[in-house]
Amino acid sequence: MTGAARCLLVGALVAAASTTARARPQVFRGGTDTVQLSVTVTDAAQHFVTGLHREDFQIFEDGVPQDISLFSGERQPIALSMLLDSSTSMESKLAIAKEAAVGFARRLGARDLAEVIDFDNHESILQGFTHDVPALEAAIHKTEAGGSTALYDAIYIALRDLARAPGVASDDIRRQAIIVLSDGEDTASLKTYDDVLDEAKRAEALIYGIALHAKEDGPHKGFSQGDFVMRTLAQETGGWAFFVEDLAQLSGVYQKVADELSNQYVLGFVSKNRKHDGTWRRIAVRVNRPDTAARTRSGYFAPAADR
Image (cartoon, helix red, strand yellow):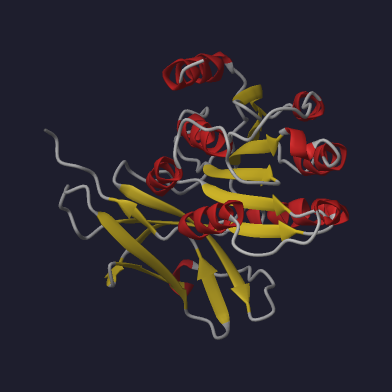
């Protein structure tokens, strides 16, 4: 199947997903020009810092302070893409990986949505966006090992899917995230790493990468392209990368991701730079509390002028 045909297939499958989350009215609203940020705040011991207020934060765009026009310290609903590597090298690890992913799915909130994508030679959407946890569990258990690794294609399709995920009430806020588990480097994608990085920087989704280096694979030494991809995509989007040596740690890793997603702030601003020039703009978020650090996406592309 060609790359274009696969994208068309994904679009049709996403359009067919009719289940939407129940939304609770919120008092925060962002306009079309609002840059929305999911922000994780931790202390020196890497514990989540909760209970902060709008005045505790500062946002900078290319070094220029911005006015915070959107803020929530409550847990907001999220749309998630759960990606599972089902290539041949995952055969001995897949059972444990599936159970860990199922455990994560069971932690989703009533207003959350998730989809399940597995990938080997190509990506397959096993379950479109839904808040039906048993359906997500059934999709995860369908995954079978075989083939090579189309990691880039899977992440690219997930980013495009999230942009079309069912919305919420107009006064609500929908966060986006991708959780991708893989044990190796890309060997089969039509898309390149640069394609995926560019798409990730244009999206609002946090990317959490879980790179498996199981003991049975032998010592992990030297440069790994797979690790580099996981780390870079996480850094650029405000997510986190995990490098797992022991399969028994997987459930704990998924737990850490779930805990982080439950303890994030949502901030937004309308840029003081009103130029529609399509340029990349760097973002920094600071917290006015000692020994704390804020993590969010590294920047965004400004709107381009109409041609």
